[in-house]
Length: 244
Image 1 (spheres, helix red, strand yellow):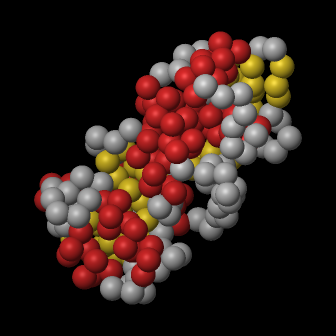
Image 2: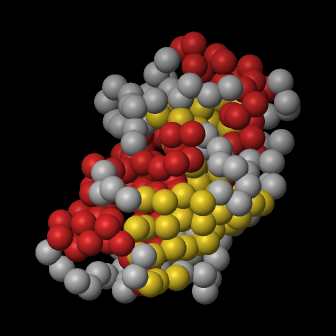
């Protein structure tokens, strides 16, 4: 069982989360804003996991996350949001969050996410490219790319991933970027080469998969996703990678 710090400005949410977690034996402390959370967090030794809402008065969740990670680099933080996009997930992961949980959520999904976040894991961040691989977790679903499975031909790019569900079941799925989408990216950026080379396209495939999980909450076994349009979310991802 875990010692959990719950940070949310909504009393009903704090109450629901506390009841759901204490029901299965977790020890729960609550805070109504970022300032109170940081006072309670201290040097981090009191807590195993922080469940941190993004939108709060005063300090936003990402600012609290960065301060928590400054105090304790190994802190396990799950960001919670009802408003964020997958862009927030990427930013939160880069800032050191273990997972991003989308509101509204059930008690079961909350407990699954807490358990999944607490499991040991290793980041596969590619230093120097501005890209993150195999370290993205959405609603308790962990995405891991399978090395050596990136395929490139006249039809575009495709990449195979393993998705670990919150119950630890592992499934495989593939993501394809159509040739049309590849050309749209090149036209949008006015360039032919990208940071990280093929890793850029792997990251874009991962972004497509993360968006799907964010919107749908699960994915079928052996699913095949095909991206054909440079939608606003993918465009922002590309712009963020190239600017950072």
